[in-house]
Length: 168
Image (cartoon, rainbow, N blue to C red):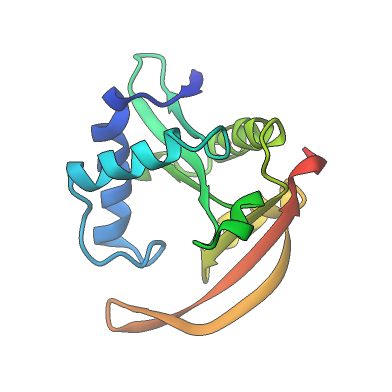
């Protein structure tokens, strides 16, 4: 299996993986699946960021994209540029096989060689697997937002986790 920097050719696979979670879970608070045009705009913003942000994909033995990881803008204001939110998605049928750890490690390594100083993750609760993955890499919970999201006729809280990028 290969982890590599994503290309424009990966946009459809990335979108397919993500949109499964939009439609079927509260892991993302998006209500509507992303269009390919939205995904292209997202991709261009991240890949044209002066090495602040990265998009990685994981391929299986056949060369199919089975997961992706990226870091992006934490907050919109320029002073926050040294802080970045990380996100990892795997194809929904591949959970609990260690692939998230492999993607996380590769992403954090890229970030350690960038101008970013702090990594953040916002995790919809409950999500023991994601919390465990982040803690494995030294992330600590620094915040908790109660009933901050509403999807599928239910309220969701989120945990905010943080780590120093220099630790990787």
